[in-house]
Image: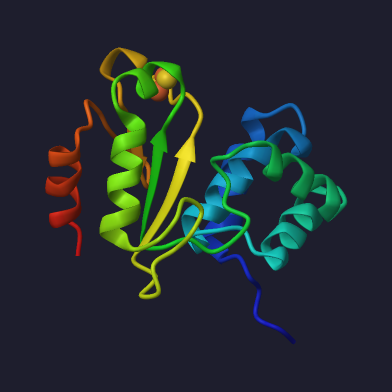
Length: 158
Ligand code: FES
């Protein structure tokens, strides 16, 4: 018998959430979040396990997961930098910050460093336009980005 891809904790969390939703299909987004929190990304086996739990085809799970940029369908580094380059952030220098990260980390947008420490993405509006440029560092916001601030943030990550 193969080891389940998702933990007992995941299934316990889903059981706890179930009464709050009209049906199991409505649990899809929380299930994707919980699985990603647990695994760091959503491998095909997790997509399959979620589909089985919810009672829908894995292709439907993948279709939803691929619609949202917050779900990782491929492995990401320990630190996932998602820098917004939408209008407000672009006007305040986001592209320069992205270029700086590419040079400093030695990777292009969409890539992960060979040591699996950093993944760099560009992101659409993060809803933090008032404090642009903004990025998500894993699940946390970092706002009012500058090249200098990015250097300070990167220096604290180990
Ligand atoms: S445009 Fe970047 S947070 Fe809105």
